[in-house]
Image 1 (cartoon, rainbow, N blue to C red):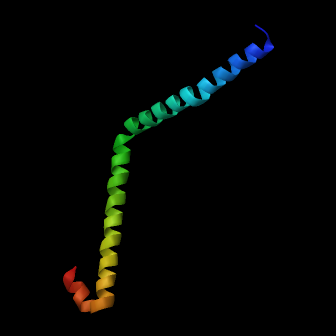
Image 2 (tube, rainbow, N blue to C red; image 1 turned 90 degrees about the vertical axis):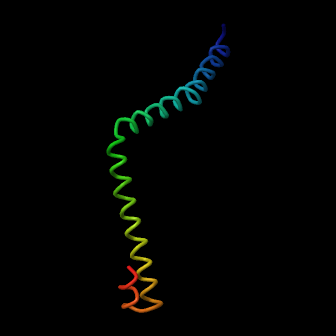
Image 3 (spheres, rainbow, N blue to C red; image 1 turned 60 degrees about the vertical axis):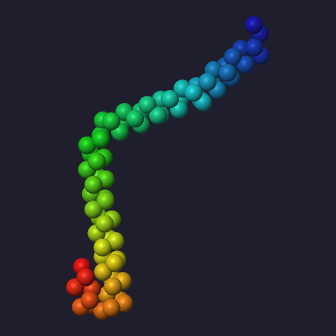
Length: 77
């Protein structure tokens, strides 16, 4: 084997590492993190869901208040 053959071998190894090994490591690491911290992720999703629901409720109240007035908005929600 001469130098150009070794260079091709190193290029092939680099491509295998770059396009196969690194993505497998990243995906398996991400899955491990999700599995390891699933309870914390569920808690954060529950809190963010409640915050988003509250924001939509406040937006609906504001729209009703702008259209019908404060008394109607307080009655509906």
